[in-house]
Amino acid sequence: MPSDIILEARGLTRQFSGFYAVKDVNLSVASGAIHALIGPNGAGKTTVFNLLTKFIPPSAGTIIFDGIDITQEKPAATARRGIVRSFQISATFPHLTVLENVRVALQRPAGLATQFWRSESVLNTLDARATELIESFKLEQWIHEQATNLPYGRKRALELATTLALEPRLLLLDEPMAGLGHEDIDHVAELIRAAAKGRTVLMVEHNLSVVSRLCDRITVLARGEILAEGDYATVSQDARVREAYMGKEAA
Picture 1 (cartoon, rainbow, N blue to C red):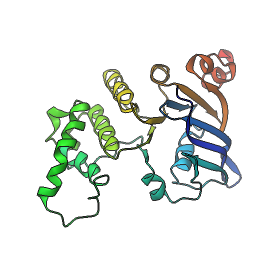
Picture 2 (picture 1 turned 60 degrees about the vertical axis):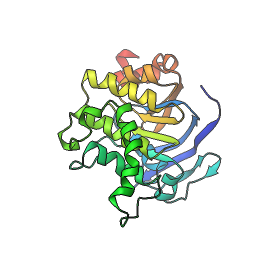
Picture 3 (picture 1 turned 180 degrees about the vertical axis):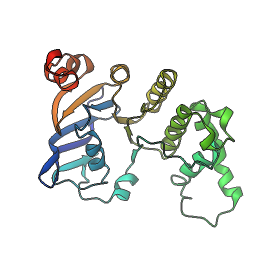
């Protein structure tokens, strides 16, 4: 696993009316790694994502991206640095086709996102790259199908394709396997592995089988604090982790 740190959180804390959703979290994500953030329900995983992407401000702590303190940045400024996030619920435009969804995402890196007066022929120049992304995610047979008509697993694949169209440096995936059947889980896992080439991935995931296969490093949260960290072999044998997931009898 590469040793250069692209994202670092120091003492990251979020308090809500006296309750600590996240408390004194120190997190280092290596450039080029697939890093998992895991833990039981209510552990604070999504809150950490919300803090890193500025959906909510921290009560205390510092966020460093690529050596720059971005703690006080607005969400849009942080996104422009190349930190791109997906969500648990598929976030595609349901009544646009697969091609149109990917092309919309490509407009931002192409500098066309706000240029609504440009002709259709200008936007058509994005079709080659859009088709390349669609084929890489094995969505070519649905290229002219509206997103609302796709099987659920293919919707998640489309969401990944549109996310990669934004050319992220750091990709944050919030439970990418949520709601998927076994065959779709294997498919999306391979897509994430392919998407990680040349970029860094930080993912929240409950499916430990996927985590064990994909991730270089794992951070375990419990009650808003870091419980353990290391590779899968290390954290899976930690008695505190086993207790957090399965109760005292399994510890």
